[in-house]
View 1 (cartoon, rainbow, N blue to C red):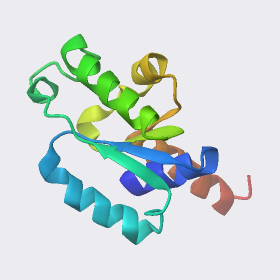
View 2: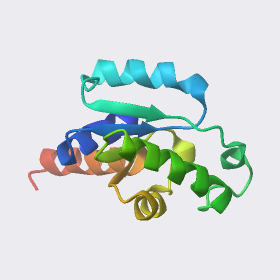
View 3: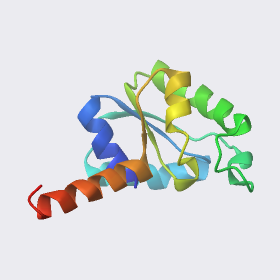
View 4: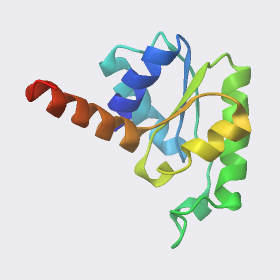
Length: 127
């Protein structure tokens, strides 16, 4: 998911920001960014602690989750990011609301992975 979002975002912008939840995940995502070959293009990473994102019913866009994500998105924009990659399935569904709040294109890993899978399938079948 993260690779799909990073590669899709890289088609849209030169400088990327990565947004996940929980600082303990940052080393894992930084390693993945380097493996994908985009370390020089990711200008900043944010990982707010948002316990509410993991509560039942959090799959809906909840203000208790969106507000700290939006603040993190603004910090990514201020650091020079031209787009934001959401890393982590728990953030699925927040791209549209977050994009409206931070004014940058936001790429959901699940949506990007599905889009790339559909494209690969279409290419295999000559579409």
